[in-house]
Length: 125
Image (cartoon, rainbow, N blue to C red; front, side):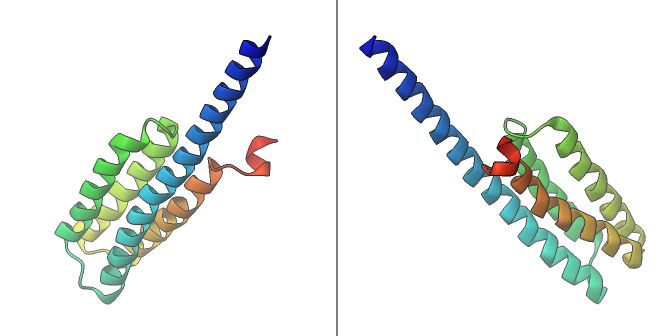
């Protein structure tokens, strides 16, 4: 009986530790990605962006994506892929007006995804 209680408590503590680690880790990954998106947005807004800027953000996302696939559903990751590829294509063609809209969507997604999988009452119930 005592062993069962100890094992149950140990499993509960490990689960809570994993959930807390996941929240901080996902938040950090999206924080770095958000900062890169802000820089790209500023460059596009000023008309200084080139395709290499978009590709640099895409390379950063590819690195983050490999790590985040463990914690996030693949649909959410492919959603970011979609909008990022559209933004990069528009930057490549010099259509900065439309690229700003796509980057704005990406910024909103980068803010909302970590919160959607974080530890909060609305996510639990």
